[in-house]
Image (cartoon, rainbow, N blue to C red; front, side):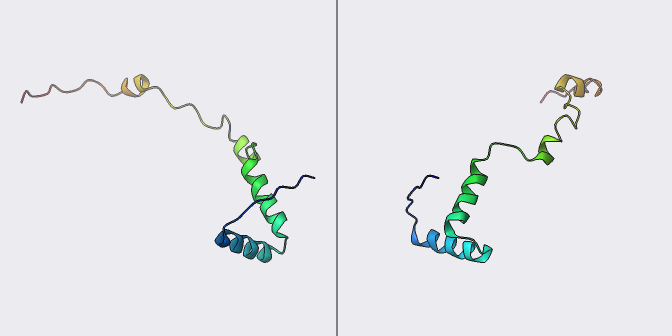
Length: 76
């Protein structure tokens, strides 16, 4: 397992320590969990299952085809 040294602003360090403490995990584990979440490239299963669930949106020509013709406009 690799090690990386990071430097945090005091305010960020304080928040990390507080959140890690609330979750009852180490500071390192807390930071690793955040990094894993941010670096994850996979969509959640709930999103993947939605693929193809909706019909494609109609093209503009299809939408306008049922509108009929415009009324003549007055010259200004």
